[in-house]
Image (cartoon, rainbow, N blue to C red; front, top):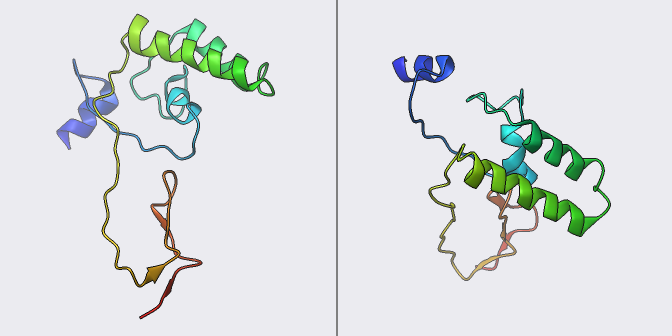
Length: 122
């Protein structure tokens, strides 16, 4: 209860949190830190960062390379220039599967597994 209240009041020097990507795009992480973003609970704000991300999603939406370059610039601001966040690790999943389980789809983003086409041969 105290930790949650301190987080909400931003009464801390350092805080740890996590995020799992919803989709395969850098914006799933970078959008977390736009000024006034719904998940920006630390109140990070940088007008250059905001503009770069807006340009990436609006101005350069159809230009894959330019959009990527803008995302790299935004990441540079967030991680290196402002040192607003520091990623500690990237999650991964290990699993064991019996050989008679077929077509079990493992997803790198979103739900861990999709069972729609899964069947058993045993």
